[in-house]
Image 1 (cartoon, rainbow, N blue to C red):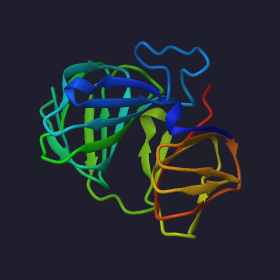
Image 2: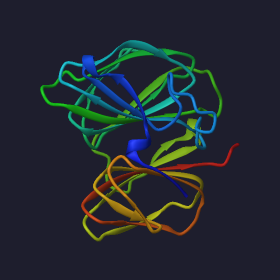
Image 3: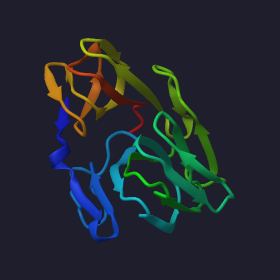
Image 4: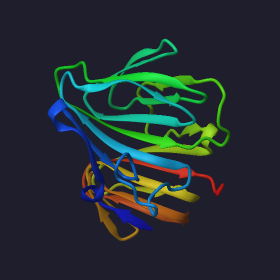
Amino acid sequence: MDVRRAAERYPGGDEAAGITSRHAFSFGPHYDPDNLRFGAMIACNEERLAPGAGFDEHPHSHTEIVTWVVEGELTHRDSTGHETRVGPGDVQRLSSAGGVRHVERNDAEAPLTFLQTWLAPLTPGGDPSYEIVHGIADSTPYAVPEAGAMLHVRRLGLGERTAVPDGAFVYVHVARGEVRLDGEELAAGDAARIIGAKDVEAVALSAAELLVWEMADRL
């Protein structure tokens, strides 16, 4: 298990424009050949947008993009005609496939924090697609078959426990609160990368929200 702390993330964004970004993997000008990906995951970005701030229209291709809002509300528009608002508890997926353009903004009056995960598809190309699940239930898995991945959301009260799925590649991100994971204490923004996960358990040291990615061995 490899624990990466929130403070170790690569800084990015444009604070003058109200955008603060923290990248878990090599991204933009921050290149680390030993930190390019983990399983199917090629990016895990924490984004903070001030009211009125956002990312203007930009392209993506050959990437499965999954967004989780921690606080606030995200406005999404894309070139396939979708326009939605994403709030806490919603899972949004944009399959960029052969190519798509989108806009992401904070059009609300409160600050926005969201986590965005990029996954490499099993097969590049194809037609882009979009999906949003509003208010996903606790412990309900969300499958991204295009990338051989599954997202598990865990919401825990103080002292509650949850099993981490066994898997070839498992990525655990603490969205809120604090947990103890296999003897390691993790706080909000911290993450653990586990290879060959088996019989791993998380215990909440406070009310907590975990995003757990289970990814197949395909490398």
